[in-house]
Image 1 (cartoon, rainbow, N blue to C red):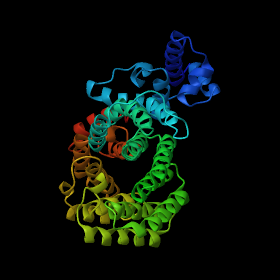
Image 2: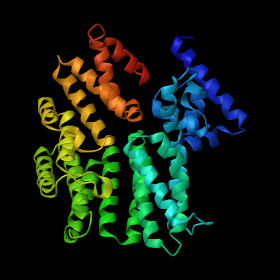
Image 3: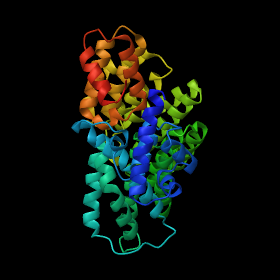
Image 4: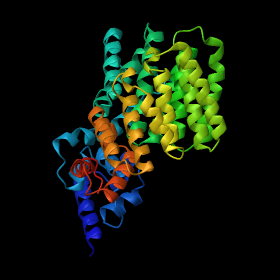
Length: 401
C-alpha cells in the first residue's frame, strides 16, 4: 500500500469512527456535509482522498469537529480559529435554510435594540475578517431577526435581517463556499423585496451578483448588477443609494472582465471612479465606497490576467489607510503581492505584502485559494532567498507544501 493510500485510509478510519460514535448512517452523515453518500463511503474506505480543504471542512462540520481532528495533525494555536471558521459553515447554512420568510417564525426574539447591537457586533467582526466570530454569532441572530419580522417593528427588523444575510453571504464566499453564499444572497434579496426599500434591493442585488461571479456564473452576475443599477438610478436622493450604485458598477466591471469583455469592464470602472470622485470617501452602507475602494477593486480586476505593472502602479499611488483596516485593505496588500509575483524579481516585496495582509486578517489569508497558489509559487522558486524562513512559516500556516 502506497503512502497516499495509507494516509487516506487513516483519514477514512477517523471519519468512520466519529460517524459511528454518533450512531449515524453514511447517508445521513453525507447529507449533513453536502456530499453524496457514495463519495463519503469511498473516503471512509480510503479509496478517495478528502485533501481538498473545503471538502474536509464540510465533513468536519458535519461531524461537529475541527478538520485537524480528522486529519490527525496538530494545528498550531493560532490556526484553531481558522479551522473554527470552516467548521461554522454548516451552522450558517442551516440558519439560512431555516429563515424562509414565507414560513411563520416561531418563538419570541430579544428586544429589537439588543438585536441591533448584535448586528453591529457581527458587522465589526466581518470587517475585521473574523469569520469564526461571525459564524459563531450569526446563526442565532438570523433566527432571532426572522422571528422579529413578525413583530411591530417589522421595517427595522427587515433592514437588520438584510444586513445580516448579506454578511452571511460574503462570509461564506470568503471561506470558499460560493453555493452557500448564493443561498445567503437569495435570503438577502427576499428580505429586501419584503422591505420595499430600493436601496436595500440594490444592496441585495450586489450580494447576489458577487455570489454568482464566485460560482462562475459571470453573465448572471453582470445581468444582476446592471439591472439593479438601472433600477436604483431613480432613487439617488435616498441615503446610501449613490454608494450602493457605485458598488454595483464595480461588480459589473468584475463580471465583464471575467467574461473577457475588457472594454465593458473599463467603462464600468470609469463610471465607478467618476461617481467616487463626486461623493468622496464614505462609509455609508458600510461598504466604504470611494476613490480608494475603486482603486483597490481595479487592482483585483487586473491582477489575474491583466497588467501586473499597472496593479503595482495603482498600489503605489493608493493609500489603503484611507479606509479602515479589514477586508478591503487585505485585498490591497494581497493583490499587490500577487502582481509582484507575476512581474518576477520582486519576491521579497511580495512576501512583505503577504505578511502584512496576514497580520491584518489571518483568517482571510489562510483560507484564500488565490493566495495559496501565490505562496506555492514563491516557495517553488525562492527557498534560499532572503525572507525564505518567513515564507516557509507562512506556507505552514496556510497548509501549503
